[in-house]
Amino acid sequence: MKKDYLENIAQNYDLLVPKDKETLLLLISLSKKIKSGEIEQEFSQHDFETSLFETQNILQRDESIQFENISKRLSQYFYTTIKDTETPYQLTVYARELCDLIENQIEPEYAKLSLRQTFKRTLPLTDNDILNIENFEYWFKIQFTTSKKIINSHIENLQRFVDSQISELGSVLKVEFENVKDKLETFLQTLKKVSEKSEDLTETLNFKTDIIKKIQTAEEIFKDNKSDWEKYITIQNEVIYFFENIDKRVLAINEKIQTARIRLKSLFKELRYKRQYKIKLEKFLQHILENSKNEKGKITLPVNIKKKRIPYLKQSLSLIPNIDFGDISPIKPPSFEIDEKFEKEQKVKAELILKKQESIAKWIGKINKLLESGETIDYSQWFNLIYEEEKQYDIPVEVCYGLIEKYSKDGNNKITIDKNNPYIKKSEIVLWNMKIEPLNF
Image (cartoon, rainbow, N blue to C red):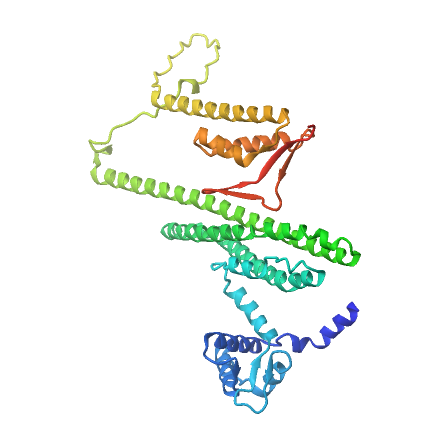
């Protein structure tokens, strides 16, 4: 059967796929004119020939495109004719969908991401949809498949755009400095907008939880009939697998966006400081050149420029070995200055790090005791509790990593992330819906 199917495609290939560039451009030109209202859905031969002439000009073809030849190639699958009318032509559904796919690849609609309305119209399951297997299959083939195409299209366009931006970022430092700064700023703003759209996509996908629960509650309806049960299980598995796959792809896109934004901010900050240093250095050198004096080969610096010693720490001096140099008298080492300000800053920094480590150990210890007593830990709640007391996000994040490292390979406790609803949005952050469950209670 598969062989016959492929042979049929091979025989009709030239009719199913536009043979050349002018044919495809003609179809897209007609499609765009219909959408813009320039011509009607049922268009005339004059409209056909005008679009063909415009296509010829775009391609800059010296030889004219024969209307009869191209019309014959399109007549079977790409347009239908209505006899005895002034507007005998009409694009087929197949032609319109092909043009839509091509236009969306060239001008992606990732910036719109109007998925909520699509979800509300096509995805929700009603009681009537699970009344019998025929209704359930109809929902799956018509409504779910429609939404599936739209979701995949948005994600593919988002991923393609993010990958192209990250690839372009790799070569941005090859241009002049001022252009680099402007371009980095543009990258930041673009990725920020795409990140917001990606978060909207994640929130929209949260509708899937209700759909999956609705499907799972329908088990009682189909379990008594073997044929219906097999179809039901097939549809359920495909729906769950699709959403799990989409969750992974969205998470990967978000990670790429966040990584690129962090890198951009770091580059932007570095370039800003380098630019400030460069300007100050140029002013300093210009001042020295203009105000220094050359008297008999000896350079005298301007009066307002004084020599400064570079501070260093006493601990950085290496000890001189006690070696007998005979009659040579040892020279006393030069006196040095201790940078008290630097020492104080280092001490304060060390105390802050120590205090942070103590806080992390304290919270991990509390959670350990609760797990030992058999209590399940919902970390999204603990995250808020830790933040409210510590007033900084890095401590609950470090606690989370510490718990994952401790219990991911522990046979007495199990870490789980809810696959149906893996993310919980709290104000400006998104948390994993993670729980740690003791197994021996």
